[in-house]
Image 1: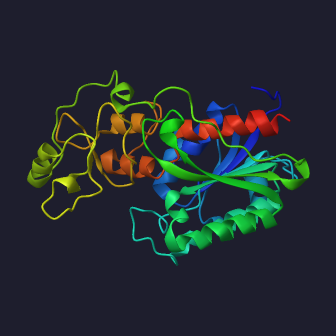
Image 2: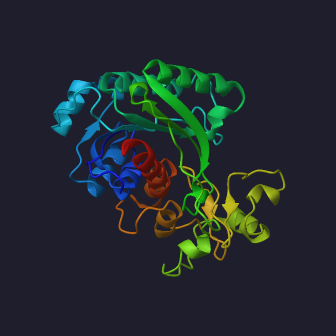
Image 3: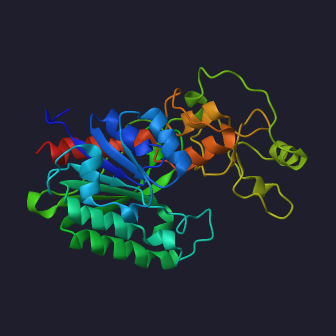
Amino acid sequence: MSSQRELKVVSLFSGCGGSSLGYKLAGYRVLMAADIDPHAVETYGLNFPDTPVFAGDVRELDAAHIRDLTGEALPAGELDVLDGSPPCQGFSMAGQREVFDERNFLFVEYVRLLAELQPRTFVMENVSGMLRGQHRWVFGEIWKRLEAAGYVVAAKLLDASLLGVPQRRLRVIFVGVRRDLELNPVHPDPLPGPRPTLGEAFVGLPEDRSRSVGDLGIALWRRTPPGESFASRHPRGQWFSHVKCHPNRPANTLTKTTNLYHWSYPRFLNEAEIRRVSSFPDDFVVNGGLVKTWARFGNAVPPKMMQAVAAKLRDEVLAA
């Protein structure tokens, strides 16, 4: 690590802790996290027992409350990174893409806390759908407000599979540097070599010959070549989000509902495989079975993706 100073992060809309784990892997200390989803908060607590979590509406959180929770003085300007992944269902390509979905505007709360805390840098993650069609004006509004808070801003569409994650997951990553630091935001470069494949990621996992889909699902699974959507074989072109994985490629995007199938057996990917797809460690705890595990990791930032973002920021901005 280039800097000897301990780097401190506050993570908003933290989910189960994908971003937090990424920062931890890059050598940062996460002072606190915040999320409103009870199961996400439970999962975060099980895996980061030493990190306080604000379990509630971010609209009720302010800088004073953050200082109380962290036990840190945190005068304005002293925090290194404000991290956050404001809810993005309204932009998601997998959803209804409602422009005026109220969840599209929780970024305003992130910017409010950014202005209060004035951290040296920020990282904000969101789905690629905000760059398309009528949603682009929200992208522009976010950029404008981040700049108005006092930051030099850059945004880039990053693919997790180019950053060590065996999953093709496109995310918009906003990075900002406080203007008085006179430094430019940075994004990580793709890692050298080929993208990681599922076959490589699943090495060492026990074989699972179970079946977890019904008769129609099995019929479509049998007709669908690895790497393709079931819609390619469905008589009405339905089941487009259901994909039979290919062992020699990264997975398609993991959504919050079961959508990825094994290539050798007519079943959804199991819990252990979903962890590997998302670059979480095998011992990362999620209670509640497959459906809950899928929901947590489908909404999570892949840790290795955030590790790459955090390491680049650490070495080229925060170490300056």
